[in-house]
Amino acid sequence: MMKGRLVDIRFAKENDIEDIIPWTLDEELCRLLYGSLLRSKNEQAVFLRDLIGQNNKTFPPSLFFIIESRSGLPIGFINLHSIDWRNRNLMNDMAIADKGYRGRGAAIEVISLAMKMIFKELNMNKLSGNIYDFNEVSLSLYKKCSVFGVVQEGTLRKHVFKFGRYHDAHIFSILKEDYDKNCRVLDKFAATGEK
Image 1 (cartoon, rainbow, N blue to C red):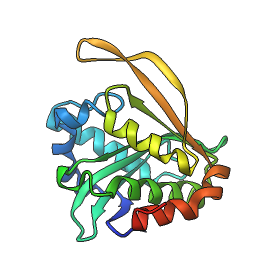
Image 2: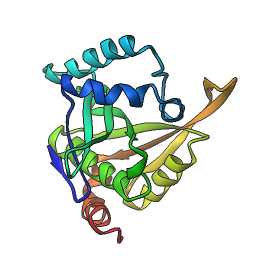
Image 3: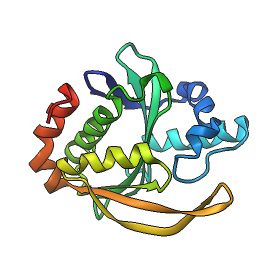
């Protein structure tokens, strides 16, 4: 478990599925996530059970975490996926699903805690993520993270089809060496809001 000032991150468990399903059926939230999660409740439960089951494998292709408030309330999730254990890189999806925790500094703290886990505990070399061109909040957040070593590597043009048209996906990443140079600043910013 990773503990923060506002949130904690822990491995998802099967008994979390009932909390997660309403988020994965929320059209507003799903439209911002990479891929398509909208399925029936039963299909979603099977998908989540399989995803959470990956957490118990030796070299899993994905790891699924719950973001909790300090009081233990599930407020979101992190999905580390496309894990390449040999080349030490992975992709991530993250969502603060509980709207009451958005805009309060939880996302930057989740990024800080997730990077610490990814680079220090999992010993990865690179973390990447794709953000749709219409997800202005996440684009703004990751652009702010450039002071901590996050870079926009490029744009996958017309990469996803949503809402009747194609959209670009912007690729953001950070390397372990950049994280190591900036982790104290990132941790301070996550803890206090000051750079």
